[in-house]
Amino acid sequence: MREFDEQLDVSFQFPGHVGVEHELGDSVWSHWNFDPELLIPFVILSFFYIRGLTRWEGRTRDHPWWRTALYFLGWLVLLGAVESPLDFLAERHFFAHMIQHELLIMVGMPLTLLGAPTTPVSRGLPNLIRRYLVSPTMRSFFFKLGRALFLSPIIAGVLVNAVIIAWHIPDMYNLVLTSNAIHRIQHLSFLIVAWLFWWNVIDPKPLHARMALPMRAIFIFLTGMPKHVVGAFLVFSSTFFYTGYLEFAPVFTSISPADDQTLGGLIMWVGALSIHLTAMGLTIFIWMRRQQIAQQRHLLELQGND
View 1 (cartoon, rainbow, N blue to C red):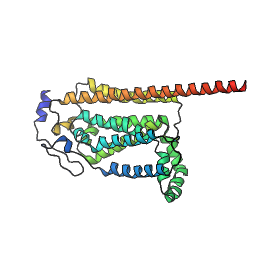
View 2: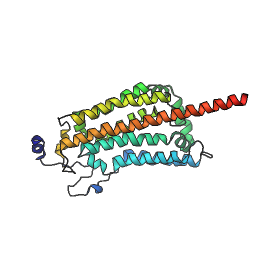
View 3: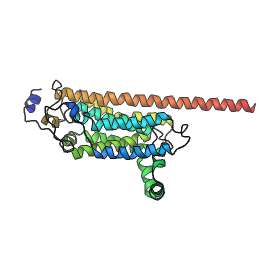
View 4: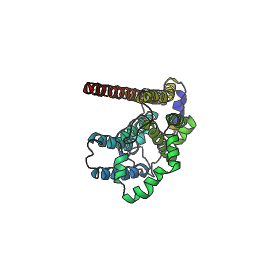
């Protein structure tokens, strides 16, 4: 711990976000971001989403109100993770950065997929775009090849773990702390692999994942294991890996760098595990419920034949 204290006796830097310099005396709640790379997609997709719903008559059965609520709740989580003062805290504390990552990968992305945005957004697009851009693209050989390749459970599972583990290699992680551009690339890569992972778990209607529901529960378990191992390793490690944080003034001075890493590892391990177990439980519940309904229908058909 003495080594940590000696390393902290430096002139702290205050990285700016989107060209804004942060001052030591500023309140944490004053650090809001306006990153166009997330705000612009939100505005565009939400416009088409709402426009598509207004054009979709009799959608209550196929697209109930709770799907719309989950879609916008998911976007609220994604925007909150990146645009709120949490991003400022993530520049100075490892545990805050882990909260940010879990919100992006484990909360925001699955909520937006549960909102089943495909049909509303496609209905909201101008007819010319749908006819001359979207439809030809979806019918193209390369699109079908990419969908078959990257949406396969094995490829998706490998990619999500490869990306998460790669970004937590100390040299890569410390580089993120010194560059806003690389930080944005990290977040984008997390969103992409999170979409690939959760697409194989959730049926984003009218699209359907390939695996049967029991296999999806196994997929969640196996895919989550490497991440949990990394989190557990950080919890029990006696080495402080993310030395880039030592260059910046901490917001919570009572948390030592070692405790910060331990807390972040717990969030990465126990926090993610809790969500994975919940998703597994819901998947098994839905499968059992569908089996029960199918059995009841079969019994009714047998009784009708009698």
